[in-house]
Image 1 (cartoon, one colour):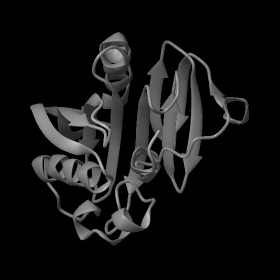
Image 2 (cartoon, rainbow, N blue to C red):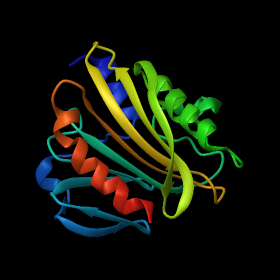
Image 3 (cartoon, rainbow, N blue to C red):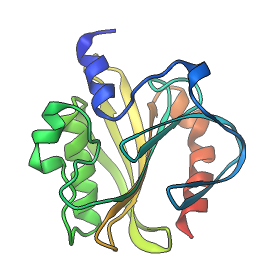
Image 4 (cartoon, rainbow, N blue to C red):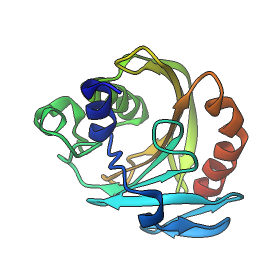
Length: 188
């Protein structure tokens, strides 16, 4: 794996720990920083600086990013000098749903992902608040095609989001229904 690819995923908050050192999230109801989620399968979990990551097969194969109540002026993915210095990757008070979507696209691009594009966007709810649900396509620095689903809101002057990212060819479609169920549990 190239240094660029490793850096890209590190910047997205994918601090890889040995599977045995990561806490195991069992199927069922879970509260992540006050956000209630229901999952029908187990995950390994990692947390750093208030950002949470769940994965089933490893962060390069599927990653569910969970960010709850990110304060204004904080970078979305919060790690790495390039991202931390880029104002376009910081949440700002008063951002509407489309601006939040654009923020996530910019943050992913700043993290080294290429060709980040929105495929579909629709209104949605997260934690009972009005927000946005988007599907994205993107490529890693080595050209591997990824797909992503974003659920986000910034109504309370803080940013909360769920972002699922997986390779388009197999893992994204395999886990799509599972992620839709988790997103649905987070809407309330």
